[in-house]
Image (cartoon, helix red, strand yellow):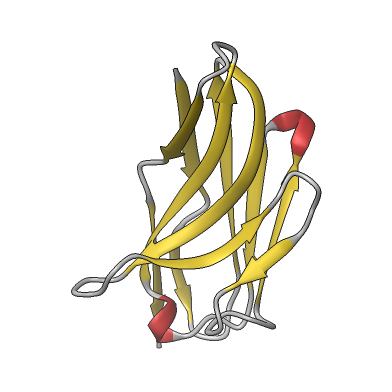
Amino acid sequence: QVQLVESGGGLVQAGGSLRLSCAASGSILSINTMAWHRQAPGNQRELVAAITSGGSTNYGDSVKGRFTISRDNPKNTVYLQMNSLKLEDTAVYYCNADVRATTRSYLNTWGQGTQVTVSL
């Protein structure tokens, strides 16, 4: 069994910054891609950023140049540094990971989500 626990969400003024963290724990053999998605009320969940175990990254168009994804492989942790936040960045942010468990099975796992609210 694998768990993802996010932290770092909160309320921030437009133009400000936040850093999200997501730590994976449990019966983990390895983790391939780790990613952040977000979902605002009335909208579909969308990819914010993703990073492979080798460090290759991919960003959604709306966050390019403002957000940076990184990871600490020994700690099974992924981070999302969010700068120049805009009102439209308000959403619940979810961590996702492609995990190979110690049972050799592959699991796509989601965290419980953390709220990010950007205000004027």
